[in-house]
Amino acid sequence: MNRVVRRFRGLPLRSRLALLVTAAVAVAVAASAVACWFVVRNVLVNSLDDALSEAKLTPAQVSGFVDAEGNCARTIISGGKDNPDIFKETVQVVDQSGGHCVIIGKQSLRVESADTEVAQGLATQTYHNATASNGEKYRVLTYPLDGRPGLAVSMARPLSEVNDTLSNLILVLVFVAGVGVLGAGAAGLWVARTGLRPVDRLTEAVEHVARTEDLNLRIPVDGDDEITRLSESFNSMTASLASSRDLQQQLIADAGHELRTPLTSLRTNIELLARSEETGRAIPPDDRKALLASVTAQMTELAVLIGDLQELSRPDTGDGGAKVQVVALHDVTRTAIDRARLRGPELTITAELAPWYVRVEPPALERAIVNILDNAVKFSPRRGTVEVTLDRGRLTVRDHGPGIPADELPHVFDRFWRSPSARSLPGSGLGLSIVDRTVRQSGGEVRLEAAEGGGTVVTVQLPGAPTPPPEDLPEPVESLPG
Image (cartoon, rainbow, N blue to C red; front, side, top):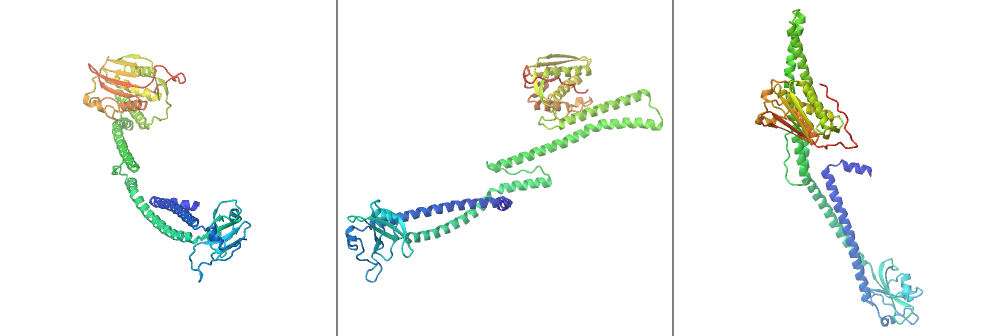
């Protein structure tokens, strides 16, 4: 059995579908044929019973064949030379003790207990099958002989009248069933081929993509069935993969471009220091100090860029390794403001922070807020003001810098995008991308727009509550290394 199942599973899908259709039709045809056979058989047997009932002999007709003791006085042998075959029935008289004598016909019938019960008056009549002395099967009707207590008449007709018809019916049913099964097999194979043609196209497309890595391939979609939805899903998958690959290539290209500048500067400075050591020509102290400061700044810029790239390389599922927990947004913002004051000591940073608790990854949230405040500090004029407010989950950071032109606002969250006016300032162009990613993962939204009177307003809306859940109090948030 297991070997048959393994062989069946090893067949192509269209062959399995054709076999299943053929088997289903075969079972249905076989069940219908068997049911038809039984129905016809019952109809024929009932018809034979009706014929026997209509041919009952009267007591007057039987009295000429049986004496006063119930013995046969004479017998008509149907089919003889002197007696033509005018009777289709075989008739015999049965007494209550089981004795019998044939009055019409050649063969005697075996007496059943049902026959003697009729003779004894225990039953009005009975139909049953019986076997004649020559082994032939008969259909028998036994009824009491009126006026002669203790005697009954058994009338019988050969069951060959029914069996011959049933045999012919079996031949017809076998032929029809065979033709039906063969037709079902052919139809099942055609249906399987036709129905699986879209699957074949999908298979060819998948094999083509696996062989050539061509993600621009699309499958024509027509209809609204499962295969159509599968094709649409495949097209969506390849489109997403193509977009992901393009973004990956763009990220690598942009990262390479951004890394080239600090690496080139580092290489130049280090080569100057190395040449000074090799030639013995000392670099003036002020120039050496400036070179070392430049090397330190470029290394810091590389470290920040690599950290930003690591942050953006995490999957967008929000499962980047940090534990999601309830965090006091006002405390995280206050910590980020303290760091911003260190980076812009000449600036005035005002803060109005109402309590608000959110469920996020604490390091990612603090990094995003630090990036927002770093931008505000970077673009604020000397002795300028940065205003920070937090009210019912809406965090607003407003600076009074030059602002961002309206045509550049749609690009501020793109990776490595930097405003032409800010290309001379330190940074990688990844800060706001990290902000957008973190806020979206936390179920919120971030918006950046020009402020009235100049400057920029960054608004972050995060879902949460003004009080923490009693069973999940926020833990202290550690600051990022600065």
